[in-house]
Length: 370
Image (cartoon, one colour):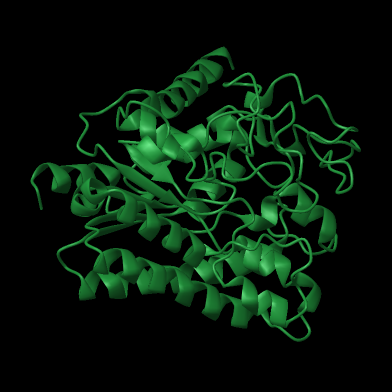
């Protein structure tokens, strides 16, 4: 048993350490897009999604930054580990912060609660209450504004790495209450269409290096499992119907990515399989150092998930988190802990099976000047 623990410890150490080793700075500029899994500060407590409107309060950020940075986690996100991996001089500043105006290594345009589908769609269907108004197209408009302000950035689009974090989960969540009139298949078609249209816009502006993330196991989030019927469970004890929905979304997204590769052979468009990475952790959490794959670290209510939708992390009822966040997959019921983001980052940037083509190939193509 002791030998087994030793082997597991080595495996965990390798998985979690790889992202800390910087590589030669093949990319000096990164532009990031997405939702709360990627947002490094464009959202604050007063603008955040309903029930998660306390991101500016402790214990958010407690593990790494020791204060809230308006990241929906206890520390760094995957995009932060990307910045470290590329040895950028700093983490990407959020677009809405003053630091973005003079940023030289890139900007983060992601917004917590953002959707793939435009806000007008939800407003027309009476689903706009407490919904973040920004969409992926809003982020595209922000990027275009950034290029207009910086001729140097506009001239170097082809040398930048574009990180398109997962987006689309909020589209399904916002339309949940209208499932009788807005079928998830419609959301899937519209959301993926918007993402591929967004990618085409980047390519037309000269982008040559893009990494696109799929959706994670949204059925394994404590919020989802709390709302789902008890009998709606798959073989990893998560909400089966919701995971199937994310899987179908990702299949359609990957098909769109493949079409874009054919249409733009001069570009490198990688697909980061968040679903597969998340699934690997949920199937063998101990291998990655986790003892609590389902419970919320920063939550209330106890029980199987330690999650209460009206008493979420950072609220007056929840001002402290668990003692060992690194043992937990889930941070606040919807978002991951820094430890989970670090594990996923290791899979994306080191293990070639979770990013296709592998991250090392993207770096090599950039080094050769493609």
